[in-house]
Structure formats: structure tokens, C-alpha cells
Figure 1 (cartoon, rainbow, N blue to C red):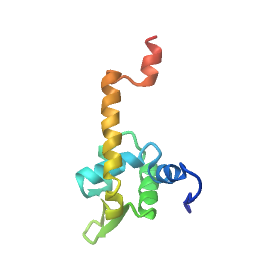
Figure 2 (figure 1 turned 135 degrees about the horizontal axis):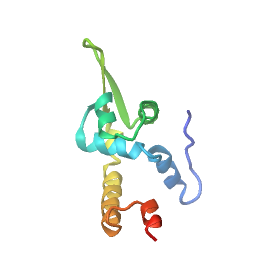
Figure 3 (figure 1 turned 120 degrees about the vertical axis):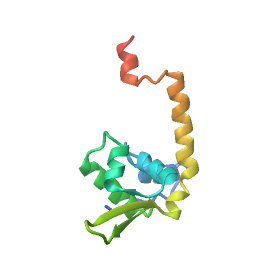
Length: 122
């Protein structure tokens, strides 16, 4: 799918960035690859237990098409595929780090409860 590049009024660059890293899993995948290095497909699936195989494949393909990660086929028996962050993807490290810090702070304030859990307790 061709990505729309925003080049307009103030704030559109935020939309462009979110278009690349938004969704439930992309920023989590980027986090693991930025801080953990190369991963094989099954290793990524184990790191993110809630993701389906289909969604993992789609998210990896999007990140690869956007130049944030690279897919490497390792010619061994059995054939293996490895994913790693690109230099361009590595440039997202400060953003991913800030998301992690903000999330840690949010979780501390809310004692680790999800929004749904907070609503049920009221």
C-alpha cells in the first residue's frame, strides 16, 4: 500500500510519522528491534504474545516497505528469515524511548490498571 506523504500545514508531519509507527504493534516491533537487535520471525512472535501470525506478517511487511526494518533470508536448512532495524528506523529511537518513558509513567500513576479495569472498579 502506498503511503500518503503529508506536506501541508503545521501538524501534518505528525500525521506522517504516526502513519509509519501507529497501530497496535508497529511501535512495539520497533522497540524490540531498536533495543534487542536482530530477531527471527518466531522470536518476535514470542516477544509479543498477543499478535497473530497474520498481523505480525502484515506489520513487518509495512515496516520493511517503509524502510524502517530490513528482512534478511539466511540460506540455511531450514531456511531462516531475520529482521533488523535500518539506520533510518534507528532514527526513531528517541521517539520510541519517549513513548516507553511516558507509558512507564502512565502505568505507575494508574498502578498498572488498564482503562477498562478502571471503569469496572468505579
